[in-house]
Image (cartoon, rainbow, N blue to C red; front, top):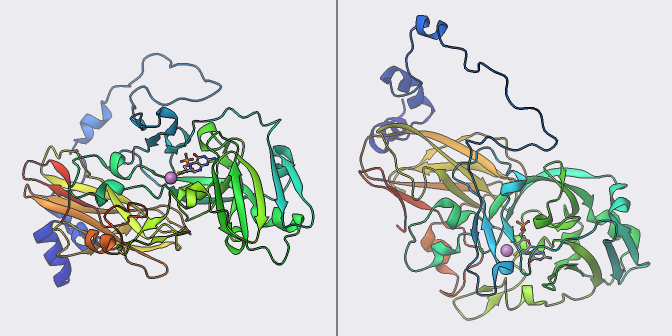
Length: 417
Ligand SMILES: Nc1nc2c(c(=O)[nH]1)N[C@H]1C(S)=C(S)[C@@H](COP(=O)(O)O)O[C@H]1N2
Ligand SMILES: [Mo]
């Protein structure tokens, strides 16, 4: 064992790879011991046949994961959010029924036979596409995260809220998105050489529109038609949405209806009064699209309680708008020592990556943290560092390290360290 491993396995309880190999000999890993005899006489579980197949599947009656919805918005329930239940999901794909939702004027019911996308403005020829037209293009599929830039803003407040990972960080989901690369459509329309921006507009009543630099619009941006193999859900923009990988969710315009090509940005509501980052000097950063490198331990996490001493799997998600995840380190002593976590999933460009590391909890108080590094070399900052540049009134794009305190009773709580 290296000194680092020794220290990690004895003091903070994190079991690095080598320490884990010893864990089985310590009797702190694995299931219950069962004599062979007992295994052979296990009764057959079902004595009669189960229910019949169905046309559209549901989940087990024993599973109750749900989005936490927030209907307290002062502008009414149509301007609300729902949060992905990050604590109990595993892997990196969010089931469509549990993908977070954020809309400013409710979910419109759009007939795909009537809906169309128009590309116009500074182009050689304005074009209109039906859903079927778009399906005829060479589609691409990629796993990407989607995160609202207001995600985790609760941790920018002055005091730590005793809430779950879902309530604090649940405006985050991962899915496989399938659609038409936007550059195919722009090339077909023939963008004027003087054009610098596109302005995308949704068909919902909120008048949602966002500007994107043309170079960005040509790079990985798609008009998404499918989400995890199914056509988009109405809440995610059915029948089509713009998808801008790695950028704040707000630019992935749902119910996409129009794209105007022009020389300047539109300076729309969503990129001036909202979704700008207020700095300490009173100025605001605009068009700060990319979501920064970030990670969060999803289990154990806020409001959970550890019922027994022993080995727990620390598991969480990492992602970055600047590329893929190079690694995640975990600390169980509030950042004094760090141990590299194992990547549980293969990750990918602008996709959620899952990490894990076993931890031996011996009944002492602890502070669990994760710190991600992305392929561009960006390291997730501490909360203090993450807040440094911004005004106290600013709350978008927060990516500080999350600290979960575990007390000697096993209660897990959001804390600021
Ligand atoms: N047309 C339209 N697009 C929109 C919005 C909206 O209200 N209307 N909300 C935006 C915001 S703030 C976010 S975070 C994402 C949320 O996408 P989701 O609901 O699919 O998770 O959609 C964005 N696109
Ligand atoms: Mo958002």
